[in-house]
Image (cartoon, rainbow, N blue to C red):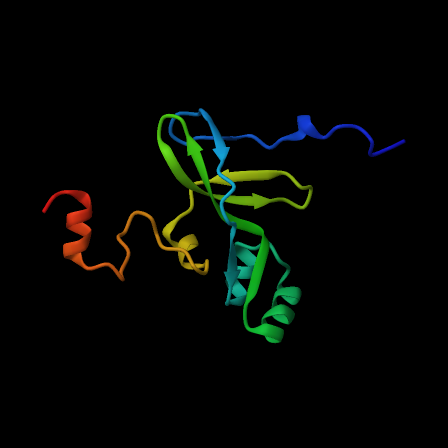
Length: 130
């Protein structure tokens, strides 16, 4: 009977880009990337030009369900965010996201820059450098 075997051994394993140690998923929310321009969809999303034009004309933007930002944990470097992409074969790869990738998600703040809604005084006091 096909499909009855355990799929436990097929766990995706990601490695830290700094020390090559195993990264652990934290079960955080996945922040999917979205595209608003035809050129972004064809080059970065890997969608054919005709299909990309049709999708953009329908909604004005396209949410890519095969690419998302997710939080991981490294034993040596702590928490880190990675850009996870799923290929058409179902293989997942994780890379360090660029600032451009952070701008193409909704509800996320670039972690290397302070939150813009927090005042400079509050930010300094939280760091203990007041």
